[in-house]
Amino acid sequence: MPTSTWNRHHILSLADFTPVEYDAVLQTAASFREVLSRRTKKVPTLQGQVVANLFFEPSTRTRSSFELAAKRLSADTLNFTSATSSMTKGETILDTAKTYLAMGCDIMVIRHTSAGVPNAVALEMDRLGERVSVLNAGDGQHEHPSQGLLDLFTICSLIDPLQPRLELLKDKKIAIVGDILHSRVARSNIWSLTASGAEVHLAAPPTLLPKLFAEYINDGEASGLDGRRKLFIHWHLEPALRDADFVMTLRLQKERMTAHLLPSLREYHQMFGITRSKLKWCKPNVKVLHPGPVNRGVEISSDLMDDPEFSLIQTQVTSGVAVRMALLYLIGSGKAV
Ligand code: CP
Image 1 (cartoon, rainbow, N blue to C red):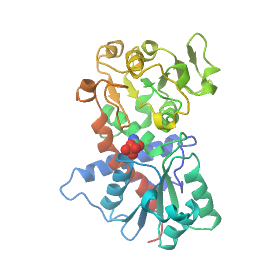
Image 2: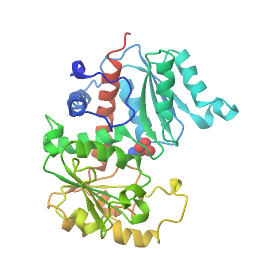
Image 3: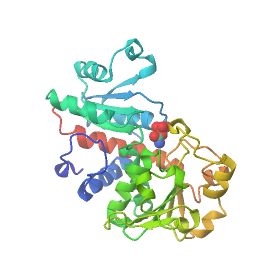
Image 4: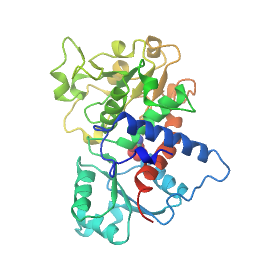
């Protein structure tokens, strides 16, 4: 596995990921997928290391798959949930992190409702001169790097299961549809997919696009935000879906909406919900992804979500374990045990 090409200590964002790093994750995850297909699915790679899952916001997939990934690598795991912790008695986030540091934690996996919390903890660990690595498991509306990487792995693996790599997406068209404004997943996906050379088309109502993007919109469509990455923006679904190879749908993140941004769920589904009939605009073998959790019948029709001919949603969850094993391995294997 390619640790020799890996120098990153924390994984906080995909904004500055290099093609070499993407390929290192894809290659390593493919090796771990092979490990996970064996009868004995465990390797001793991180034996003696401690991985703490510090979740200050609810999660099913990310939290459980990081825990399983750490266990498959033989690391010891600690699981923290803010609601049942001493934060209810006034302890701060940084003091909580230092408490886990004092227990000998090697890797902290952090999810928080506020953007920047994993970065703040990473800065504090670096300031203290500690070798602890921080992995961002989703911070506010900022980023969700491990989800971006598992989505990349899922798509690349479909094209070449044995050698998933970034360049496979060079000529692909990928649509990202829905609540772009509040989606940290969309931000990580935009970084990774545009880095591959794929054409990425965003489709959302104007109220669910970041204001920055609105400046680039002309008659409902825009292109090439920085002239290098192939990013296109649409207020309507059809141009985004036309001849698309992959469609990524997003949940409406009502918990992050501070204003009334939508007409009604029914109308939203009619305009931006992914259904079998709308997939006719795409390439015939189009595949649909969703990071989960899904609101059935809103951003995607229930029948489509369950149709293995189109839906990669369960594959994404399976990919998540191998990709998170790869991330823990790549940042953990350089640490002295
Ligand atoms: N995709 C994702 O982050 O799901 P969870 O909130 O269940 O972790």
